[in-house]
Length: 84
Image (cartoon, rainbow, N blue to C red):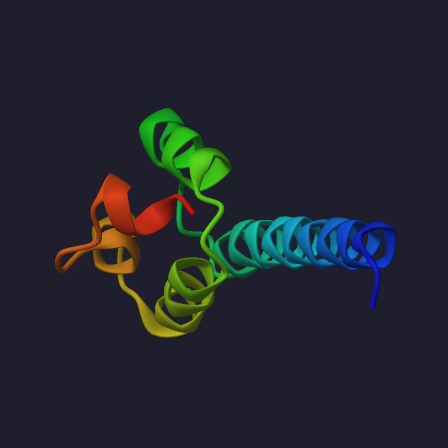
């Protein structure tokens, strides 16, 4: 693979990750909405700034059963682990 092909592949991978993160954010909001759990502006901002697919997937799994917004985002998730 030459340098141009490598740059193209890296760009595609970054685009796919951005799309996956966006889809997870949309899914989290949808799940919380269907479950009638309110999402504060602070939580919306935190969600919007998170680019880490693993963190977002973790939050989505929690959103399915959480009793509150706090349960979705609780337990050691820091801004350092949210952004990559």
